[in-house]
Length: 249
Image (cartoon, rainbow, N blue to C red):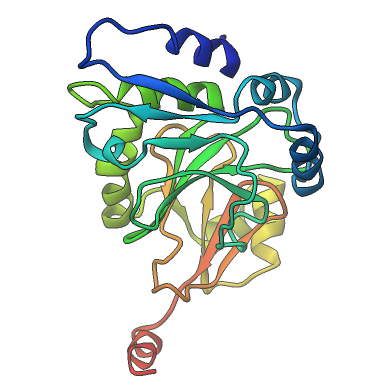
């Protein structure tokens, strides 16, 4: 599997014709910036990421006719340095690497035992969902570039234009409190026992493209929980009366 640096170098090769996408690399990290990044993230920076950031911290897409989400996703900073992102109940160590210009972000979900610079999730506020995007920055870069040319189809496009809406409407993968409490999966069981029957649960420990959950199922003040750094999540349900009262606050 190609590293992020190999992917970026390959995709930076000159394209034939003025109608092709061109890349403008963002400057590499300085030594001071490396130290600042090391102080911010919860894990050692993987060597693959260090090699990448010595070459470039990210890139800009230069093209007159970008498509779909790629019209706005034109600048990618793969370090997440100096970015601010909320939703700490879901992502305690989240670093925004790109946005769509509408207040939605692609974020790295780093943990203390992370060995890769990833995975990457798409965090949307309208509708309020989180969607699994990619396992690594190398995969993410390839998809950004693949979708930046006609017909504009890529996994980025799928998540941004289709899967986000599907997750909101269908709310897939939800597990009840009772199912978790009776599970043979020790993590699910312990997580459920730490909460109560007012919660619904989502298991994203082995996600595939398009898996996710509705973090704002009951409005932007929905209470979300995460089982430590494992990608087990839960959100607190609200009764119709509670939702009615919230509307009038």
